[in-house]
Length: 115
Image 1 (spheres, rainbow, N blue to C red):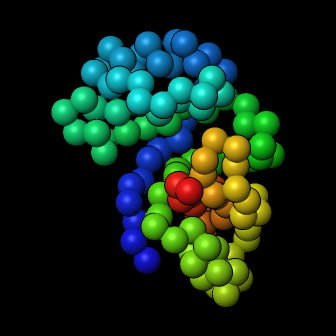
Image 2 (cartoon, rainbow, N blue to C red):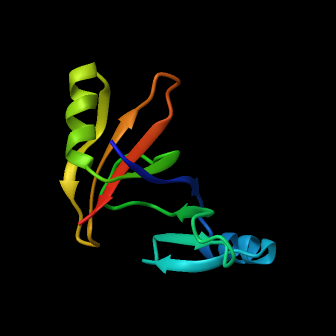
């Protein structure tokens, strides 16, 4: 299984203030869907973080997102382990396929692949 990137997810109720804060550190907005914004370093585009408001598509908020090459294979592996799936595998309207799983420490991991 190939991991493409790992991105921390930060929950915010004030997207503008949070975006402005991280812009002051030097990050730039690379994706903005209103309720979710990804910022990245202009000199190292894989250095990213995601800000999230309320997700109308999921009842829980992930702590970290891990983009993988084959999300279906990871989903099957998590099921085989008996891991707790807290947001079932689905295709989202913004072009990703994802599911959320709880890790052994209790963190919610968004496992995502781009379609």
